[in-house]
Image (cartoon, rainbow, N blue to C red; front, top):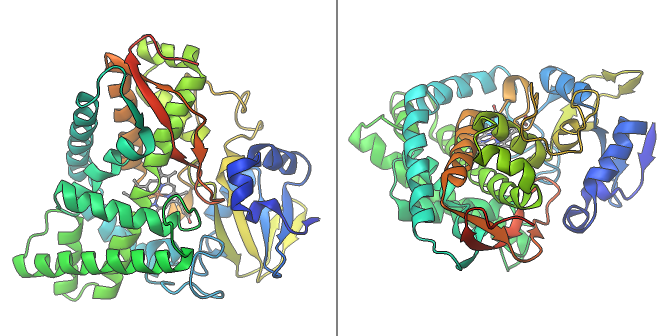
Length: 410
Ligand code: HEM
């Protein structure tokens, strides 16, 4: 098995300045299972083929989430501090017991419909404020509006509170990138996490007092009040949903605008109504693969093809690589907006599959719909700045000019 010393997969700079797609394509082709070491001795196995990544997601009994799903993503090296209590870092049966009420209370059809209305309203408002000739940073001025609508509904808060909650959660994930923090990275992470938890605790308290249960936080509050969930678990999972929702779709939207700029002929098919927006959305999700990988710990030997990953090893499942696997996708390195039967795996698979997938898909789909129907368009006027993170693929700056529809393009 290939062992890479001082692997670039740990390097945030490589993901911002290098070509991780090409590096992963090489692994996928020649070394679908490989070991990646870091100077401090940390190592993980990397899975890069679609079928292997999917099989690893499904086998949650061999591969545990409770040791942290992001390299260095927790305060304690061996076990994540929220382990067993927060969805993303909990194993069965605790994970299922937490996920069920959150899914039915926070992500039911009615909630998703209400979220859709808020998201569409926010997109329309932000577009209405723009005139031909305006120059803006899309990542700062428009993209955060997408999860803002989600927060407003899930947490029953106003736009100003939703905006500050967004800011704090973005710092938590992008903490290695100075574009977000500007101070000592770990301090910024801790401060942001405390700020979000305090804010949630206050919301929870108010909902316990009022008895309202018509949104996610209200439903969690009533569970706490009735003894069905501890306050800690409610808070940690409110945080998990907020972080999961805030730090992903804005990056997907920014990369979508950049892709549209690079692929004018493909985009024209959406504007002309030749390609349904849901089909286009699936391809934007595959192409952007915002959450590049997730990590697991093998709690028993885990077989991948002819290789055996020994118990006790960290294993990383590379979504971004699986989404470019030629065994599953025709011409995987081409952005094909009308790609049929798109099996993109950007939201993972199995028991941990993204709880927010319907909401995220709706956000991107509405954004694409509104953009295609707009009488204006964005044209990228400066090289985009990529987020310095190996975990999230996104942009920290995307300078665009507003032009008349039809005048955009490379
Ligand atoms: C394009 C946008 C998004 C992408 C690419 C994405 C990706 C993912 C992936 C790959 C996982 C699986 C993690 C694992 O198996 O360890 C996940 C889980 C999760 N996501 Fe998302 N996500 C997105 C949007 C959202 C949104 C909008 C929300 C909430 C509103 C959200 C909340 C969560 C939560 C709470 C989990 C944990 C689920 C569990 O462990 O059972 N995500 N997401």
